[in-house]
Length: 146
Figure 1: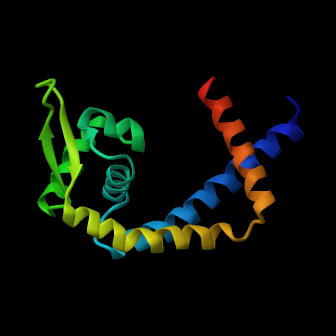
Figure 2 (figure 1 turned 90 degrees about the vertical axis):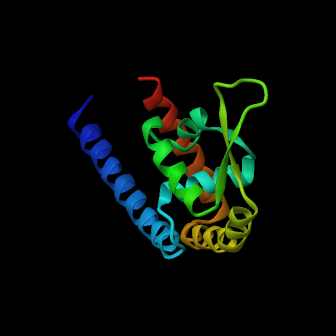
């Protein structure tokens, strides 16, 4: 490792971090304007797109500590966006299930969410997006295997 490589790696880390923060700021503001925090929105989006989920597995799917899931599910249940459903096959398992009110909510806000993300990413051409996806995956896989 030479000093030039280290400096370039640090610069890349800072640029990625700042870009991530800027993107999240835009996306999270919209989510907050809809009355949810980013974690609540992620749970709603997961349930809408993937169907009922065991509470024990939600954290891993949205990158959240499992201890926080109960709190988030409680808040969404209070808003009548989801319900807990006991497994018919295993009494130890409880599923989170989106309600009709939750579906209606996501169907109202998700199209604008998608549009905002597309607007942010429109700074890149389709080819640049593909390249960025491949490069970010490469970095992510490498870091995960360290």
